[in-house]
Length: 429
Image (cartoon, rainbow, N blue to C red; front, side, top):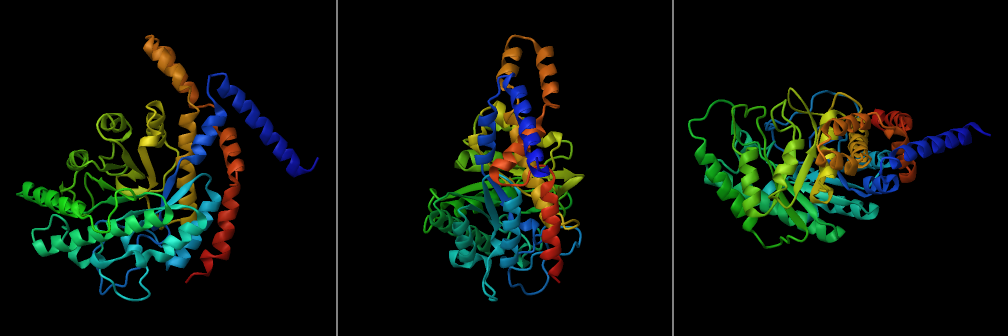
């Protein structure tokens, strides 16, 4: 027997043993693999180029609290390089994926185009690329890194002309999202996050929030070129950020109420809360009232630092809540982090694989057994089985999932990422 065949046989035996373990607990392993593979995960475009975008700008502008730290070589410098990087990520990360774009990734052929007049034509290459690869796109308004955002206010700005500019930008993005969704026959989630806030204690917390409601309402009222069948709006709150440490206009409480009353989606970003606060418990509370949620999967350390996602307890808890509550179909999943201090392709793949691995782990949990034990008051036994699940043979099932998806199992993808760095990233100067 050749070494390759022997490895394959061993892998099959390991998977068979793992499958028997889970099936003895009442878990349908085949169903878990199939669900984990077909659940869409939207990959953020901004990891590959450090949130730079491709706009033609005049002069330096403030980043609005958005900062990718590090200077590792190989950053994507244009749309073609970014799409090339994403194709490598899609090859190494198993499952169904989408790609999540910011408005600042418009390709304007060297012309300066203001954000309030962006149009679908400026994303035609992205649409053609996604169509050729049969993947969906998602979209984001870009309310930062612009001269009219340098003082930390956009839709809540006291100057009506500045607010009007950003309202027009939001409407333009809704038209672009509609065109993307229609062209790809796949609804686009359009997320709205803005940096509005103050570094130190404001005397008036009320007026900016009133202005933000009025601006958002005007933006969402636009119907010309906007079709809710293809453009699905979401709003994203935040506790604090660089330059808005004391006061954020669009807090989570603000947007939870706004999304509910306007019948749009609320976005929960795992890094947008207090450093010791997690979103897992919020999911079951919010989905009692909201039709659905957008989840931005990130990893905060100290502040909203958007570290690369790993398979930690916070991530596992989020997916446990989704599966235990049968709520997976009610959420859109998207990654959101940017680390310029390491190989950017590895950062992408580590995060994408961690998210899907966390989903698989939750699907392999004996949920029915846990529910029955809790319902019968056997809480100690329930906790014991929860703890036993943490050391269950997840790895063998994960490797089988990767093989079925045509992605490298285990750590095999690392060599491929290193080769891509040598052949592609190292050539960029």
